[in-house]
Image 1: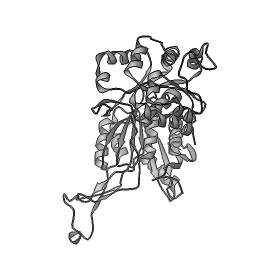
Image 2: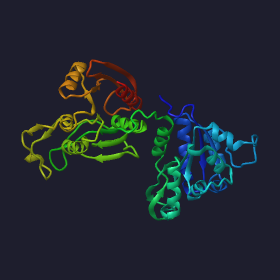
Image 3: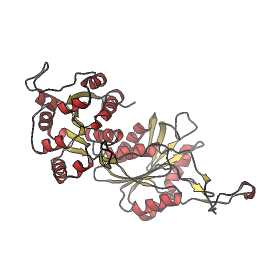
Image 4: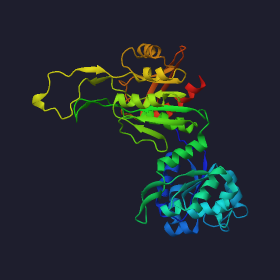
Length: 398
């Protein structure tokens, strides 16, 4: 298992906003799940909302609350800022944004932020009117232009019982953004990447359909990794059971024809296509608008072949690097190689779902990737996230 923040030093800055309660779970994820070395710094206002003891429990370290107390005093703000990899302020109130934009350093956290420069990442959370205020917007714009990280708030229910843009971003989005800032090597910087994911449904009537077991997990892992490597990612998602990655442009579809339409409409700008969707091969020739009654069901259902999405993509874009996926249990390598050549792919990833923990409905995968020039790469069983890392790195470097 990869701990994505192993050996990374992170300062978690907490300011006085109601969203601070969400920072407890965020801290636990950073330390326990991802291996980060986290030092928590709380403002006086933050301590009015939650006790430092809670954060000491999850970080395993003292929480710093004051500029001039504790064992290490002299240049604490400098030492902390220069020795850390990132300064994550979550929640980041309108006040801390305004102080930073104005160069004010009147407590430990604001001093660390100014010393650390664009190591700072602000996960914004505030009342929707505060966020929309032109002064706040000007401050956010200034910080963004100076290279500070800004994670926009989400639209939803607020503590003031209003609904608007001001909620702290989802925990997964914050972690993905931090991952990109700390671990991305820019392999796909400036590139446009399309990733397809999930299953398609081909309806028989208004309630029944033909489909498959794809969850979308492999495609989502590829989309996240491509974004981390600097790509402009478009995710075209079929029916899924996993959570759609936050912060990535997504088009949701249901049928193979809908996915084909979305793919073709965006094909001409793509540099890479990762065709991880499990497109259902067969579709009924006739679809009933109403549910077919059991005693009126036909003796057989006539099926036709679904459109070949890679062929459709290639008709529009001949230059992009195309990575296909193949699910085969018999003569998988030969069949996958034949499919790659027939469809003019550059690479194909073969999975054998008959193996335990491989393919559909699993968090892990094992794969062999073939290249059009006869290359072969084997990726032993591991998490789909790690498989995605290996696929993208191998594709870009070959």
